[in-house]
Structure formats: C-alpha cells, structure tokens
Length: 351
Image (cartoon, rainbow, N blue to C red):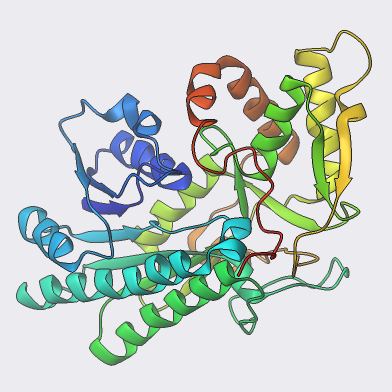
C-alpha cells in the first residue's frame, strides 16, 4: 500500500513510518520540520527505496495538491499536529491553524484526489487523535473513555484536536470520504521529544536538575508504548470499519508521581548517582491551568473487532525507554537547544 504519512518526522509519526516500511509499504513522509520534528527519527529507513520525504506544511493547500498529484497515495495517515499542551496554553493560535485549518486543507486535498480517481472504496483517510478530547475522568477505576464518550476538551490543544476530529467525521458524512479515526492515550518510548513528561524526568535527573511534578502529582494517565501504538494504527488503517473510531489505550494507568518515581528507580539501577536517589530531585511545582485529573481508555472495540492489545507493560516500556535515552545522548542533546525546550511553559500568564 502507498501511504501518505503526515508528521512522519515526529515522535509517533516516525514510529509509524519505520514500522510501515518494515511491513513493505511504500511511504511518503510529509513533514514541515517544525521544532519538534527530527529526521534522525527516520534515519534507519531514509535509504529504503520505498521511502520518500517531502518537506511541506499541511496548511499549504498548493503543496498538498502537488504531493497528491505526484504520489497518488492509496491511504493517508494524518499525524501532523501541534501536540504540547503547555505550548497551547501560551500560543493557542498555532494549534488552531495547524490542527484545525491544516486538517481541513488535508481533507480537501485528499477528497479532490479521491474524486478524480473515481471515489475508490479502498481509499482510507486515517485521522489520529487523542483521548484528551474527552476531557477528564473521575477517580473511579471502572469509569473509562469509550468511543461514545461525549467530547469535553479542556485545553487549547485538546479543543483543536476535537475540532479536527469533527471535521473528519463531517467530510465522511457530507462527501462520503472513507475515513477511520483513532484516539490514543499518552504515548512514550524512544525518540520522545524532550519537552514531554517522561523525557523531561530522565534528562533532568541525569543533569542533576530538579524534576518538576505539577501540583501534587495525583493526575493519572494511561501509558501506551509508541511501538504498540504504531502497530495498532496500521491495523486500524487496514482493517478498521470505515466511519468508525477506535480508542487505543495502553491499559497501564499510573499517577504522574508514581510514574516519576518508577523512572527514578530505574535510573538508580542503570546510572546511579554518587549519593542518594534520583527521587531526591523531585520538586512539586504550580499546577498546569485546567490540568485534567485522569485519562483512561476502554479498548474493547479495538480488542474485539481487530484483535489488538498492548504487548508492553509500563514497567517494561519504561526500562527500554530509559536505556534508549542513556544510549542515545547525541540525539537528545542536539534537541535541547531548540526553542522552549527545558523551560517551564503553559503558566497561562501570557496575553
């Protein structure tokens, strides 16, 4: 299958690109190479004859039309997005432009090609989204997000993703475009950009800096290993029912504080400090505005319909992730000078 993957130089997108190439698919990786992208993420497949990279912005309709004309993809996997909640609090306009308007332009470019080719039934537009569109859950472990959970976004980021989800559904209902959607829980693993929680903890710990924990650390997230997610996304693309959405979860709920302490314990074993534990560096800081209390996904649909379940526990995944960061210092050190990395963002104080 010939796949157009948007955002393929990002964290989740690059995992999809690497796995798709390994499965024998032809991949056109379209990425604007914003601050969070890194072509090193796909260096292992860059020389593969089935791989093509195109630098383009999904907000640029002319560039999208050219890509569809030149490559005639049989499916689109749309992962390009601004994704950092803290940055969305400080600069929401970028999130609206990329996540909503960019998705609109991509849908229109895809629809134009699909119609020119006679509206093939096999074409797929797979929109990859987040569980954050559903808002926040109560502490009851029996209550989880399902595909029928009403949308209740609480941050500019989640609102922009909710808007893009609605656009995709509207293009399916109005124009008949064959779409599938997926909403995932928090991803982690190798190549995670060093502004997100897990890499921040690892890199601050290794540098002997304070490890920031928002609020009291009680916020709960469901953690999904990125390679498991990439596998699930390709499965949804190929076997998902057109028009349906699939929630993809790791079935690994942990509070932020519990997760941070797990990472510190792994580091204590793999790269012990001269004195004390890395957990001594944990520092509680002012909470993020509008910080959702809990996310958790009920993965019944993808399990029952497509036979997918996560293969990596959070303990196994964190061990692999910490080791990867220890082994790949050149990768993350090169990214630490990028704009905003290592700074506290998202205080909600800007105008």
